[in-house]
Image 1: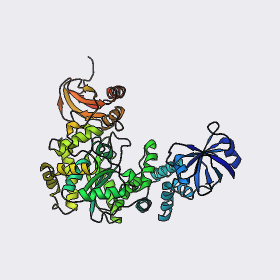
Image 2: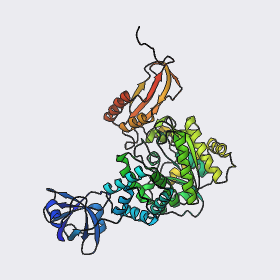
Image 3: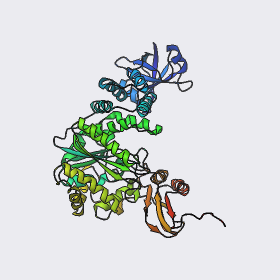
Image 4: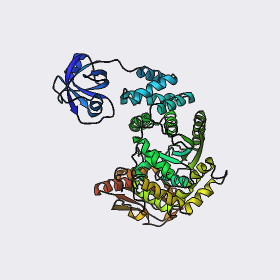
Length: 504
């Protein structure tokens, strides 16, 4: 054990972490990524170590902002530091790597250590990869789900509530902005917690943030939802299933999404808000997360089995996911298209998908007879009741309830991609359109995105605009334009596909 003077490193790293001079680390026998015990006069903790040769002097310890606030120490105060054994969950992760199943208590230990920042990204990545390679039994998925709920905040709305979720992969999927007001207008409670984009051009929270605030704590969400029967908020500030956000951050650079983890992620958040009925949207098609109907049915069966273990009524809607929903991709553009649809001027694909999924919830809530939910959802939309409800929700969340689609600012830097010949649209690439919208600046720059003019089967003429790219900065527009020219987001073919041989 040695005594060191604290130096604040004014960065938040999302975990307990300290920085040591290499020679001080050697003196106590620790290496980078090892655990150490830290003790001040009034508090103590365990943290990860990283080392430096130049940033600190010998005898100093760099404390990142997260841990600094937890310890409640002053700059330059003395703390003691010594080696610490790794947390118990390391052995459990090693067991999972070996392909062995974990029990309920063991999952609680792993998830608790994740939430308490006792595991670093390397250890969490190992856990996720073990899940990816070995899979998880349904018992394990149940244990993981329960642990994720129990380590976070739960909200009791004191009345039945309903929810929806999409497995994702389809650009422009702004259906939540129609489903929530349709369901809420029927007087069913639907407090929708949503995520921000990770790999997409806009998450639901990013799109809703164009219209109103989305960051609320649990008590604020409860007040808003009970007042309006609906809400669309970002789940990150609520404290529900906090392990999920940590796991997702590690999944992203690995480009993995273990099925057991996905099931637990979705169900834990629904359980945390006390959902009684849930509809799961499973888009199927090239570019979606689920590419075949067979895989969609298998996934739906797993969702249903897991929901039964928690006494949640759940139904999956397998939907077409081979091309974007609607025509607009990117936060501001999607918010504009959602408002247009609520006003009765939206594209058929957005209206059809939204009312079909909303109809399932209306039937679950017994406000529509079996088989009649979609018709009721369409009636609520066509009557203007959904638009009125959406304006109430926007106002309750601090936005302008009178905003019109034309008042939503979109990127003024634009460029069009045109058809090279007469023909038919034979393919629209979800992946390419998402990449182009992100290159243009979405979702961080809310006005960036893509407007898709035509979809599969449409007839186009040479020089017709296939898509228009919007950006807030010329440099981003140039990046997106160059990407569009090389990724072929929209394929045009005539009736004659090939000549064989090419030359005679």
